[in-house]
Length: 64
Ligand code: SF4
Image 1 (cartoon, rainbow, N blue to C red):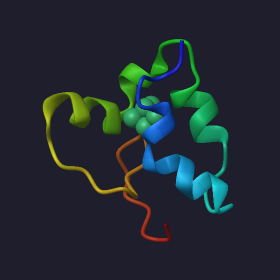
Image 2 (tube, rainbow, N blue to C red):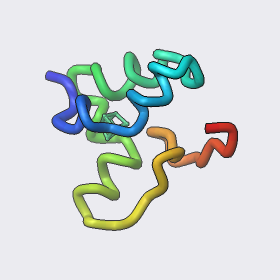
Image 3 (cartoon, rainbow, N blue to C red):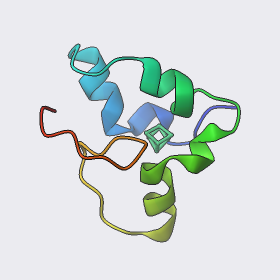
């Protein structure tokens, strides 16, 4: 079961623009349960702000 935020996650926009490799979606967003370990997911659950260009491992990619 993929992440509940999959369709509206900002990372989809970066993927469509060819700026972000799909490995992130495969390893986190579309994984069976690894989305629980996504920093974006965790912060969203806590209601804590996180920028659109934060990757699932928590690093902020300034090229996005
Ligand atoms: S980046 Fe994180 S919050 Fe966004 S869809 Fe992937 S697993 Fe979910």
